[in-house]
Length: 517
Ligand code: NAP
Image (cartoon, rainbow, N blue to C red; front, side, top):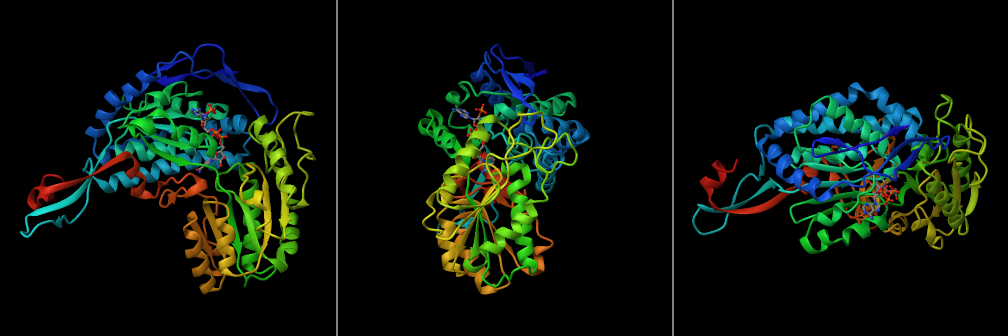
């Protein structure tokens, strides 16, 4: 059993008892324990502000990019060990673990490249100052400089690697030091990754600190130059937004919360044509990858009324190939849920949705996991529900079951109906629309854009080359309106904006153009 340590003030510090156990969700065996008791959280933030911040601000974008490159390389060198930890503590199959770990190194590497392309600058200035008076000289522009506080990151349990380092990549490149807090239940992987970075001696002092467990009173010390980026449930997001820092000191907050993501099968898609098969395979993958514990997973599929039954049948056939069980067995293709409380929520959630829907595939209480000790592990079966009256099934648009569960809902095949139904989710991270009808793609795509952070438009020509619905890419923004938290992360240079103060500069054009570049 590993006892996790916190990496604070450039040293490893063990919390004091009691220690919280972390388990292997496939067997319920304890694998690690952690505590953050006794940490001086105010000092952690101050260390970031006074030591890490000045160091990063003295570096150019290219130098910060080189730091990210070194982090990515050091982590990649330990990829196999990290994948094993993800499997033990997250209940991940090897494929799921790779998705998380490679997502971390890939995003660091992408932002390293961006840093290189931003070159020797230490801040960003907009091109072409605008004329503000009669004469040509007096102009205005905008400069974006690193905020002088700490970037505090609070992450969800499902992506202890990617979640940590996609946020860190943007903050460090922008010039802000990071204090990162993974969810306690899966903090072992983040701890091991931090250990790799410390041992590789790539982290300048004060630039990266790890709170391996509970946040204690960390968030009570947030000030007006700090930022808080949160990923997790909508309820926790709302609680953190209401803290003293955000409310009284205007600490900048970004929230990535839960979301009822969707797929719309266009009216021209025929049973068993290319787009149909793409749709079926994609839903099966999205609902079972990471056992459905993915913020971007498809929860609602809108299918023209006449085709709902065939879609359920074909999806069921695809899910029949799944092997649920202990990821230690290499034949297993879907592992357990990550915690006992996730399993409870899944069972209650399926019961809730099934009260307004028809159970078309699977049972929330019957599952025979391969390679699991008798009666142990947090295993869940894949579930498909169907609904005829999409508007009446209010819980399906409102309750996120964070597991391998999807609901197929009938719609009338028009773009207007699809848009209205997607909107019932109250704001999502991503929706996929499949069609070869350009007018439908345009109307549905533009209509649902207001309700989504990302829209994946698939016609037959790109369906076989497209990145998966659930894959978050550093080039594009991640985050969604309303229910999804209202946040925005990544999106190449856009991802730095959260960590930079944009300030209007007025003055002599020559001065603005020469001195501030
Ligand atoms: P959660 O229970 O809200 O926890 C998220 C994080 O908040 C954890 O690190 C947790 O720490 C921390 N936390 C909880 N209460 C806190 C408090 N009072 N003060 C400070 N920190 C606090 O969510 P989860 O169960 O880990 O994650 C699942 C949810 O995240 C799902 O609903 C999913 O949709 C969403 N999610 C969204 C995205 C996205 O990008 N939009 C990505 C992944 C997941 P402890 O673990 O120590 O309690």
